Image (tube, rainbow, N blue to C red; front, side, top):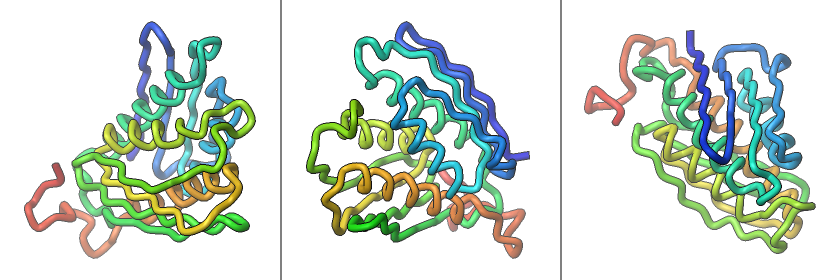
Length: 197
């Protein structure tokens, strides 16, 4: 079963996260303590078709940075664990995601080598009380710890909420393709090297 449970505690955050790549998305429960991130992760889980349960107690009286980054780390670790040896996965995924005036491309490779490459450019510093720079902080933490090479490119957008939403929805759609099983190669590592690392 492609599942993982990660409990991570630091002086700044306490996170309990459960992930089931083949679970019931309708059983997802997300309570990060950061309202906008709850919204984004709900969209991500829905479009990825995964069951995601996250609970975070963080030092949001300071700001949202520690919670957002640490949830990205924890989610990345859970993905890495749930995918195990990665046998049979498609490995690559991409999605062009429109959200009204915004258009964002997400392309990824579950390579075993994490990295985030982007040209997202938000026109505001905040979405409500959420710092827009935290979108990239989350993606860096997630991609690095999941071992995913992640590219997100923005083609258009003038509304910061729409740009962020397109990025998270696109990430979910690309993940859904990449973690799906290719029945022709279900017992094979999807690499000519014989391993993904």
